[in-house]
Amino acid sequence: MYTVREYTPADRVGVLDAIIELQDYERTLEDDRLPGAAIAEKHLEYMLQQCVDKNGRIFVASTSGRVVGLVCVWAEEEFGEHYARPSKAGFISDLVVREGYRRGGMGRALLMMAEDFLRAQGVTLVHLGVLSRNVTAHSFYIAVGYREYEAVLVKNLVQDR
Image (cartoon, rainbow, N blue to C red; front, side, top):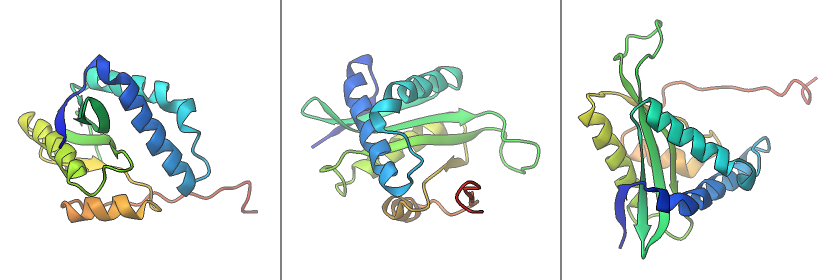
């Protein structure tokens, strides 16, 4: 059994471990990703600062005192003048469930906590990004009601001459 709750500084090491695991997994999908250990501290500081600046939150899932999942969420006040979207939209920057704890509803519980937090702030639209090659995550988001909206395409100009 697990508990989903708001992040506290005591969760730092567990959250760093989860960030490392996610980043290292994404490196198996895209070779331009840096090693998890190289970016974890900086990325956690970025998430925490976004939470301060944009009234966001990090929620963690824990079991037996160990952080085994997390979601980071905040509201975006400006979405740009090109969109007929609400002026306040939610953004999920990270959702991680550690290996060995997946497929038990934890990802869905974390996502629901993030969405409930956004709803309480009056947010009506939430967006997130997922690597195209992360088929498992992509399928999960579709299954819980997200839809494809925009694709980002890249081309390596050094390799593709």
